[in-house]
Image (cartoon, rainbow, N blue to C red):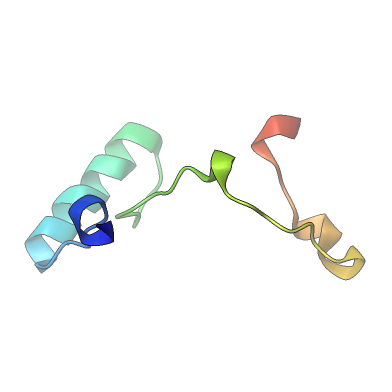
Length: 59
């Protein structure tokens, strides 16, 4: 079932087309896939890495 919904582009041309689209839409170069993590479990960072943690809900 995962192959029905999540597919990685198989050609360099398709990868470039998708990356160009992400860049144009979101200003994010080199991105070919994105996952909405709003419903995914995400463990809190350890105290030594807390400064690297950023949450969209805190923006």
